[in-house]
Length: 119
Image 1: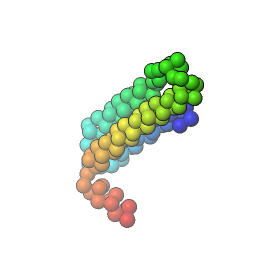
Image 2: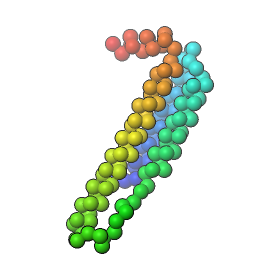
Image 3: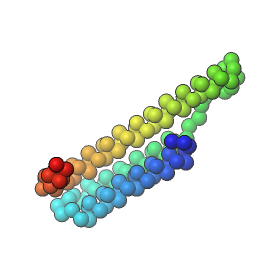
Image 4: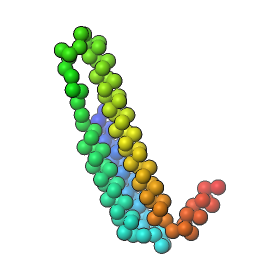
């Protein structure tokens, strides 16, 4: 991601699309558990809120803690790279958990139809 704004837009778009898929599935797939799908939409909103809250962080050391500007920039870049990679990994893990929850709510007949369509 080039900046925080683009990262936040990507998170919002991803979560919005997933919530939309849940609502569509809840309304169109017969035999799906509506209460579980509603809870999954809430889980998606929680994931979005937590991720957007954790996007903003700062490097805890100042320029004077390093011998020169190059060392400062190098350490700061490492810090931000590690922090954003952790944030993205946690977001992706949350998405995987939500997709697993979505798949668990599908009726057996729909799961079989999905497997057949994937082949």
